Amino acid sequence: MKDLKLNFLTDFEYYLKTEKSFKPNTVYKTAQRFRRVVRVAVAIDYIFKDPFLLHKANKPKVRVIFLTSEELMELENFQFTQLRLQQVKEWFIFSCYTGLAYSEFKGLEKKHIVKGFDGVMWIEMIRKKAQKNIAVPIFPKAQELIDKYFDENYENIFDVCSNQRYNSYLKEIAQILGIEKRLTTHTARKTFTSTVLLYNNVPMEIVS
Image 1 (cartoon, rainbow, N blue to C red):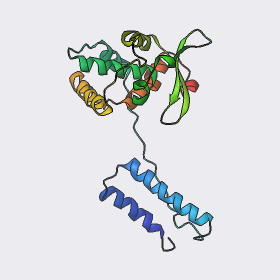
Image 2 (image 1 turned 45 degrees about the horizontal axis):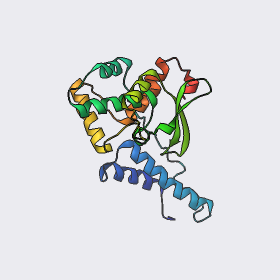
Image 3 (image 1 turned 90 degrees about the vertical axis):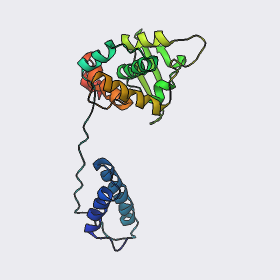
Image 4 (image 1 turned 180 degrees about the vertical axis):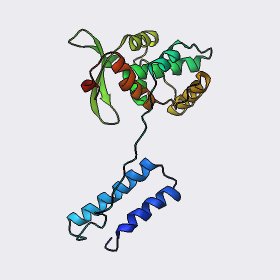
C-alpha cells in the first residue's frame, strides 16, 4: 500500500473496464470501495497521506427507466391468451401501483394489509433489502388485483413463480407489446414513484 501512486487508481479503473468488462456504475462503486480501504490506512497511520487525494471520481449518470402513463395503460388493457403471461403482467402492474420489489410482493400476506387511521387500506411490512418498515396506500388498481388473487385457503396473496422466470416472462411481454424498455421489478418501482404517485397528485416531497 505504501507504493501506491495516483496513476494506480486510473490504471485500476481501466483494468475493470477492459479486462473485467464492468459497466461504468460498477467501476465507480468498485473504485470507491478500494478508496475506502486506503482512507482507513491513512486514518490508522499505516500510510501518511492519501495517494488518491487529487483523483477526481466522475460518478456516472444512471438513466432511470419507467413506464409512462400511456405505456402503463396500454399494458393494463392488453389481455394475454396465455395464463402465465397474463399473471406476470398483473403482478408487474401490482408492483407499479405499490412500489413493492419482487421479494416483497412474493411474500405479501394477508396480515400485511391493514386499515389505516384515515380509513384507507395500506400495505405495511418490512422491506427485506433494507430491513425497514414500509407503508404503502393501496390504490384502486392494486386493490382490484388483491381481490382477484385473494384466497381464503392461503396466507400469501400471490403464488409467484421464480425471479428468473418472472424476468424472462416480462421480457416476452415487452416484445409482444413493442415496449422498448427493459421490464423488471425495478422498472415497476420507478414507475410507481415517477408515474403513479405523481399522477395521483402525491406531493413531490412525499414521493422523495
